[in-house]
Length: 386
Image (cartoon, rainbow, N blue to C red; front, side):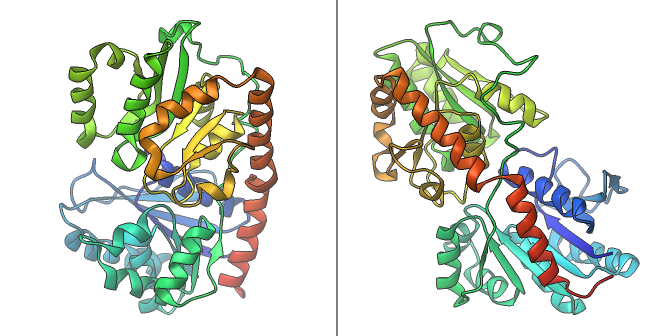
């Protein structure tokens, strides 16, 4: 039995793409017969507290309470890793996200003489390149991990430039297309239940609303669209606490438009997320930085018409005018106009784009493809374990 320790900053039931991808990764590895333990951090525990393991189908999750600063959290986490390794004897360590998980994985694996892999996920490359990031630690992690995976070719190129390595594995985000489907399901949420009138255009966004996701462009787009036709902005998720002031300011400046911002709050399962996505007339992803956003892939799998920025790996999944529309980051202030232009399309043209979006996900971003790729990767990482 191959034994793997996965370190991730977020894990279900945490919000966001990082938690989603980490949970999916661990679940797939468990299906492949790998014995997986997960170490993750929680802001809801006392600093340094370690909960008894949560036992899922074929893996265990250990949650550690965060200290106020990483210079306390990381040494304590290393102590926990040492304790787990002495009891379980892991064959490899997998850091999901470059910092802090990837750094700790590469460092701990080096200390113990076992294999390591790190996953570059979203803006972890860009964030660590500039203050207050730590460029030296970023480079050390990239140079010392045995295997590096990236969610897009764009990120792979950045890693090669930073580290000189040309062996980065592009491990795409994937979608469960049986859950994220255009077909309505029993119990799906309705417009009426959300107070959305039949004539309103539903502009959708999924995830944690914050600056890097282009929150101001979303709000401005709602104002622009509502100048010409009824519309609402459906936030499938939550507003990050630190960004609530932006929404409050919008309520002050555009009180009538702000009344048409509908926020679902945290949703506990992907079926609920898919239910809300199916309500969207157009899905918006005006990100300033990205890896390969899970939310966009899920929207495309649901057959949504999507308008997205050209951040990160988005142009790798979306072809402008074919299966969606790309708006350069320098033109995100015109997002509202782009929505109005799309709404003027004939229904047949919209249907063609919707189908092409779903087809792209089925062809290149399926769970089965990820499973095959992970099997190859884990065999190369831990070749001789029994």
